[in-house]
Length: 222
Image (cartoon, rainbow, N blue to C red; front, side, top):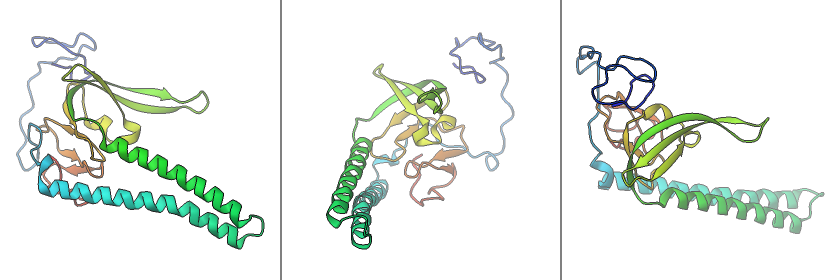
C-alpha cells in the first residue's frame, strides 16, 4: 500500500508511514449517502471501442484536419495580401516567405497528429510524481511530471504541462492505461473513490455521475 499523505510505498501491515509518520491504519470515516457522494466504477471502461465513442473520435480527427488546413493556408494568404497591398514587399518574395511558413506549420501539425495517434496501448502504475525546473537559467519554468512503470517493466513519463489536469487527477499507486488517438489518452482504472473524471476528448473535468462531458458534449469514458 501507499501512504495517503506522501505516497511512500509501505508494507501491508504497516501502522505508520516510515517516511512522514502518518498513521495509515486509521479507521475510515462513515460513508456518505450515495446521493451526496457520487463515485465511479472500478475497472477500465468497456466503452472505449463502442460505435458512439469511435464516431466521436472520428469527428475530433476531422476537426484536427480542418485546423491543420487553416493553419497552413493562413500564412500564405497573409503573405499574399502583404505582397499585393504593400509597396515595401514584392509579391514574389512575399509568396516565398508565406510558402515557407505554411510548410513549417504543416510539418509541425502533421508531426503532432501522427504522434497523437501512434504508439501501442499499454497499462501501468504511477510510481512517482514531481515538479521540476525546465529551460535555461533565467527562462525557467516549472513542469509537473508523472512517472509510470508499465506492466512490462518499462518506464514512461507524462509531462502535465501538455495535459493540464493529469497531475492532480492521478495519485501514486493508481493504475492507468494509455489509449492512443485520444486528445487525453490516459484512463484511470479505479474511479470508485472519485467524484469527477477527465474527459478523454477535451481534457477537462466532468462530474462522475454524468454520461456526457458538459464542455464538449461527447461521451465520458468511465
